[in-house]
Image 1 (spheres, protein in one colour):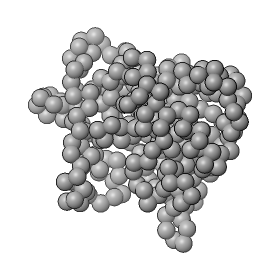
Image 2 (tube, helix red, strand yellow):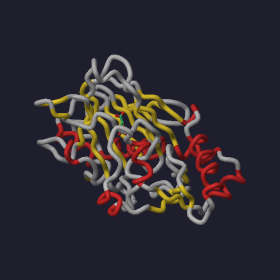
Image 3 (cartoon, rainbow, N blue to C red):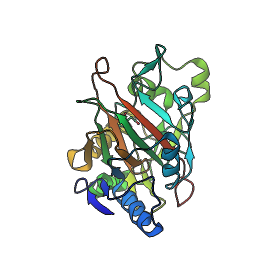
Image 4 (cartoon, rainbow, N blue to C red):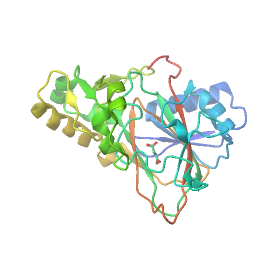
Length: 281
Ligand code: SIN
């Protein structure tokens, strides 16, 4: 097993393993630590059945499913299908997901710790996924900004984020609005596993800051969001079929990109982890 950095500041590629074979505990520990430290793990050339994906994901933490259950895999409901493919003229998966910078489940009281994608079919061009390292972005903030944001809370509104995250979907219904309370999240989040601080302010909506006037909060939040996705903190993943990418939602943001979904097929299986070794998020 060998570990290679994807860029100087984000991501690790693991080579020399077959995820369907037993992996010695001490080797797995090295992979796990590289993932926690670099926020994104890439393993190429893997063929996993849905069940094998769930089993491999479970090595990193507790597998759970929290969104868009109509697109769960029929044989393995822990898997969310991301795809433009149809069966009997009905979409088999979520065709349009995450095309803005975000962290999964930011709007939940206990957001998922991690997400994994396994690429099955990939278009010849487009449909890449960007990742950004929020440890690295936080570390580089000017000290006066660190002091200013250290104990702030950002108010994450699932209702307000809908048009940014899903411009193709209708506005939230009255029932959805009533059942989606705003959630306060720390602007700076201390990671449970290594105690490093990461920016956790999201990437796409000028959120409110608790106790701060919107006229002051919006430019501050926008500054942090733009700071966090400068090129040195990001990695653009150009998918190949058989790739596995695992990212840490506590310390990374990600963003999908456009592809020609009328002419090309794209199919990925996503699994989600609620908590990892260090316990509750
Ligand atoms: C997502 O999980 O946000 C979508 C990623 C992708 O489809 O590239």
